Amino acid sequence: MKRFLSVENLTLVAIFVGIAFGYYFKEAALAIEVVGQIYLALLKMLIIPLVVASIFVAITSLEDTSELKSIGLLAFAYYLTTTALAVTLGLVIFNIFDPGAGKAVLTDLTSSAHLPQPKELSISDFLLSFIPTNIFEALSKGAILPIIFFTILFSVAALFIETPKRQILFNFFDAINDSMMVLAKWVITLTPLGVFALLAATVAKHGLEPIFNLYSYVLTVLAALAIHAVVVLPAIAYLIGRFNPYRYFWQIKEAPLIAFSTASSSATLPVSIEVAETKGGVSKKVAGFVLPLGATINMDGTALYESIAVMFIANLSGVELSLAQQITIFITATFASIGAAGIPGAGLVMMTMILDSVGLPAEYIALIITVDRFLDMFRTAINNWGDLLGAKIIDSLLARSRS
Ligand code: ASP
Image (cartoon, rainbow, N blue to C red; front, side):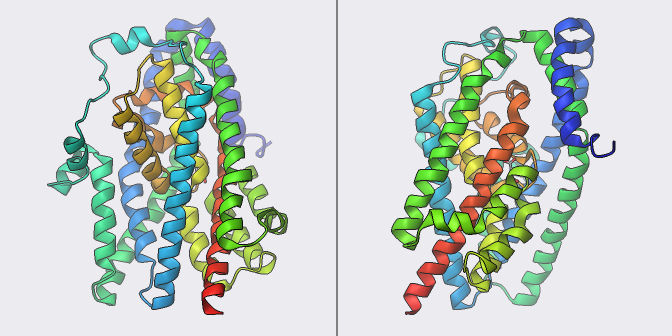
């Protein structure tokens, strides 16, 4: 019984009950909208401390001995390249299939004056918008890109100070990170209630059409994930790592399968390290460094899904995104996947930041929440597969450079 009453199962029930409730009891559904808004506010409350602490901890985990430096550089190069490829693939596949195009169900809303319109930015404004002239102002405004920019520079600078001093900062941010994870788990227990209220209110306001539109969105995300997992990542492994990626997958398949079932990169980490070392032949040093860092910041599946989801939401909102806004999505989706915690639904939390960056209301995640848990399983498995391939590629490169 207790097993059946898990958050995942209750969320699944809440999805269906919420839709029916919103459809049949419009007034009541609108009255409880505030419950959904409270749930969203609680999620958003976690973003900044989580982003700052997880990036700081990840970067300052680098030791400054030369071997770890090269592992660190290779790891960051791999993470950034594959994440950028994933977002690009997401945007390309989206533009080919264009799910939800011409099905704007929220045009009436977006055209009303009280909702923010997508921002138009010149290139110089765009570049300057990365640099927080006052970090406390950026923090208080929740300007996520400048915060990330500052955190990266701050963390790299911390690598150059005396070790005991760095240790103090590390312990501080590590403790914040752990506490935020606990808090996130608490907020996640409210998911069934939040999902119920959000969906009921959305259906009451907009009818059921957005939900019927979702099949094209789901298929687009799954197709792009499949291409990334079966073609793009293995090609990198084959060309750069010079090993057979499919044979490697067979050796380490246990980890992506657990990632799929748990929808959590963090929960899968002990299994990933174990199978990479014992079955995949990755050295202890590389696996012990690249996999924990990867579970925190390397999420190809999440990055790809974020880009498609935001473009899809824009389509349903009847908003044409300019090239500058698509570039903003490219950058924010990359950082959102870096900042996302390795827990179920973390990608959805981070999506509010991408929506915000292109002037779409965060509440619109309600449009895709119905299928989020389902897609979470697939994207987490791809996140994990990307980490494991990265460890093997870096291990092969180091082994080759030594011989
Ligand atoms: N559940 C994903 C993970 O743990 C993160 C996400 O929600 O995209 O890797």
